[in-house]
Length: 339
Ligand SMILES: Cc1cc2nc3c(=O)[nH]c(=O)nc-3n(C[C@H](O)[C@H](O)[C@H](O)COP(=O)(O)OP(=O)(O)OC[C@H]3O[C@@H](n4cnc5c(N)ncnc54)[C@H](O)[C@@H]3O)c2cc1C
Image (cartoon, rainbow, N blue to C red; front, side, top):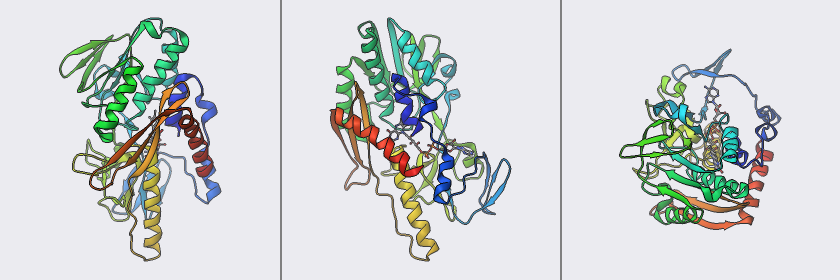
């Protein structure tokens, strides 16, 4: 949920400090909360080590998310603001408000990345802020992605619709631009380069080291799971951004909170079945949806059915103020339900 708030921090409608909710609240549900770093997972002896303890498990659900890895692109850290980094988000907010003219570039610099529509939302929200501050007509916005279309997991139709929304807000999409390095005011791609005054980047993501060290993930990959979220290790499941659940041999379930939630429910059902000595039959249905914010308190809605037969289905409902209100309600309801 804090990831979602990052976009609202860019527009200035929300602050980090006032958006936080303590995770300790899950103790109300009879769950012990241990706020410590996991340093090692010992699969053989079924032990998780934290900074101060050794915890034995019968069932383990790995939900470590991803780590941002801007260091994988030379010069990225020094010459850009990282959209997904909570420390850079206030700097993005201030930088766009302080700009009078020039070029803003938004670049996706690694695949896969979490919440595939989020960088597009960020670009659209930035355009709205520029319209508010009266600088929009003198600021060019470019969007660079390594993929040929805006949202490959959403298919060509949805990608075209997103492209048209970007065009209508004077944001130029440059597909098939794989970033290799960044210098001051210059971004270099596998072929070609471009100039910018402000670069806002989605950095490469990597699996947390602890998942590689224990052998659950191969170096450079996420933890492979089947549709019941099982890993190759007995009674160990992986959910959310840390996993890779394939839909076809080319498409994986996107990294999004709504899918992490659905996978968590799937695992909960399977563990309960195992404890009751029933068969473990729950599989993740791959259904979900998310709101694509387009600025000025409007949003579209992306409905996704990853395991639809014969191929994944994604549909984009046109932006309206109602979907924006639903997005706000979604955040409130989830926080109330979980914490
Ligand atoms: C800007 C933005 C907007 C987004 N908007 C949406 C949206 O509208 N809808 C949607 O569905 N998704 C959205 N997402 C994606 C969503 O936030 C993620 O997919 C979701 O948070 C994944 O949940 P997770 O539990 O797998 O990982 P996380 O939420 O990242 O949680 C993993 C946790 O594990 C902790 N951790 C990692 N390593 C260790 C360790 N060694 N020891 C202890 N703890 C550790 C981390 O600190 C973190 O708290 C958005 C993402 C971004 C960046």
